[in-house]
Image (cartoon, rainbow, N blue to C red; front, side, top):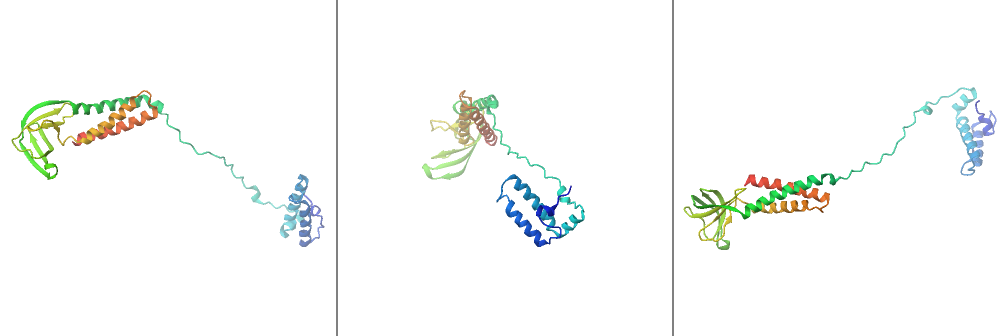
Length: 250
């Protein structure tokens, strides 16, 4: 059954817009939730508001008085889909324990690889003496009594070196050694007491080998945490690869 909006507002059907507005204001002063927060007053106020929205609009009032039903399609809009809160996915921490064995093995390999360089540094095989076939000074510096940057050719191989005081000359006799693994050359002149590596063996190689040695040794210690073992394996592999590049370029 349709609601009697005139009765709800307490007016007659002949009331004009001024009377309708006045009646609504009076009802609102009595029933507004800010004035009367009781549930009954709130329900009645909603009816008063609904009655005013219809009777206060000339077109809506005409349809109401004639009994015509007005369908507002906005009332039938599909409700918005409920939005569910989805927390941002947190990165899963790496479980380094599952890589502990592999990390230890890589560190052990890196350690062995680095030790081969120090073995070559300490132990060389004697090649004997050889005569310099060709010697060329590529640069000269007057410091430290004179430094000669040279290219030297012998029957045991060609190499670069630096001599102090006097250059190596063609026909000079050199005593030479060669490492067993990587073939690093060392030589000694007749007036010298110690062998020295040629410039074909960069000092950087032994520096990198030292880093690999430290990383490998640190990674095989039993009490080392899995995460540190993993990092040591990464460092050892990286510098091992760098060593291989140096060897190929030497």
